[in-house]
Amino acid sequence: MTVGGLPMAVPAEGLPARVRIHEVGARDGLQNEKVTVPTEVKAEFIRRLADAGLTTIEATSFVHPRWVPQLADAEQLFPQVGDLPVDLPVLVPNERGLDRALALGARRVAVFASATESFAKANLNRTVDEALAMFEPVVSRAKAQGGHVRGYLSMCFGDPWEGPVPVPQVVRVCRALRDMGCDELSLGDTIGVATPGHVRALLTALDAERIPVEALGVHFHDTYGQALANTLAALQQGVTTVDASAGGLGGCPYARSATGNLATEDLVWMLRGLGIDTGVDLGRLTATSVWMAEHLGRPSPSRTVRALSHKEQ
Ligand code: MG
Image (cartoon, rainbow, N blue to C red; front, side, top):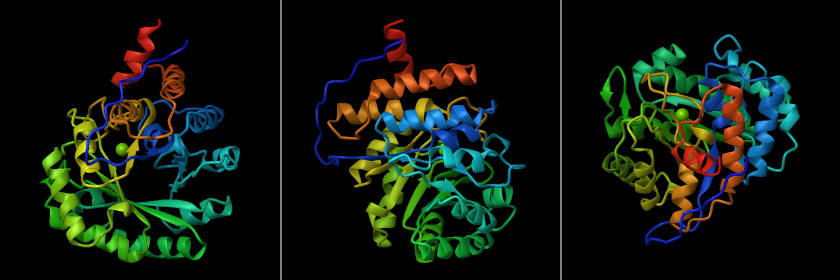
């Protein structure tokens, strides 16, 4: 099947010329899918994402296989893709995970912190500060090896147990992750409840805290259909790194919704229409997501994937 079609590019003022997409489908996406994909299919998926022009592709997670069985093959997968000419960050939950990643030559790693006590407890069985203490040696050891560290921050806008999350609470954890040495932070709207004014308020507060916008990425979920509106608000505040998942892989386990991660194709469609360069070939990417959807046995939730792939069927 071929796929095609692009929006007319009509640039708008006050937006960046280029956006770097941090592709999370192979990690955040697949870890939240019910079907466990064979290692060879994952490797092919990552190769196809690179071929479609994505330059940052989060490859897998070195969390204990018992907790995330979908990604239990990290040791087998990483060497199969390690020589691709793209950045391949991996998630490391603790020092043991870091050891495993470093042993395979990974030098770009990510830790996964929480802005709320409830999620820190549920996901890491620790308080927010205990989790930060656990990450400290991970970050410092990765940095000592010349590595690049991304700090994910979950529940930056709302939390399923606590409701709306106060901006100063998020700023405090961002500050701690930066002080620890994280090169980049990814602000996660884990349950998809953010709206554009809230995004602007958080980014304004981080700017006032002198956390450089170049060090910030945004990670929106489309649970309530707000991901692109929130992305646009973030771009207007100077953000140029946006997380997205090819084909919208990965539901939202906390909101019981089929719609979780912002689909990379939906993002590329909007950015392309705004005349913002991403380097991504939308046709190749869409074909890759259609191919992956066949492996998962369900259609992609991405509107753009559906529109483009139905067009020529
Ligand atoms: Mg996500």
